[in-house]
Image 1 (cartoon, rainbow, N blue to C red):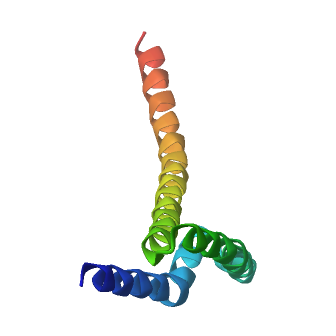
Image 2: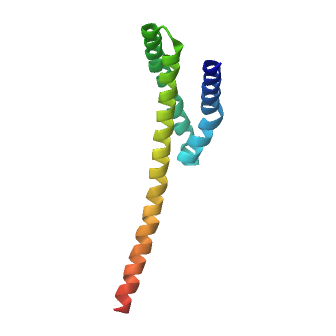
Image 3: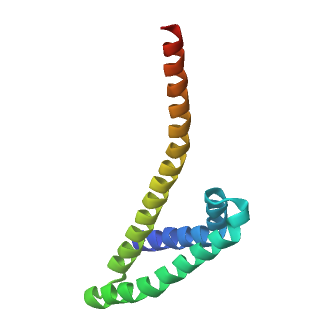
Length: 116
């Protein structure tokens, strides 16, 4: 029963990420004028992942005679993709914060120089 539950969670996660969430994530990551290019690149990368990932999962299945390790492989790649997206988002937002912090520090230094 545990294996069936994990397969259902995996299938729902794949369906949500490839149909519902992907346009939202791309729209947040790229300007609206570049949305068509962003979606094209994302769909190309998804297709590339399917082309490369399926033979690897098949090799894992044939080597172990069990779908458990093939699903574990696919799940690990999904987690890795989520972590990479989180890191990219943090870097994107920190870049804006660094600009604001730099301006604030420069303003403070100028105020200190004016007082002296």
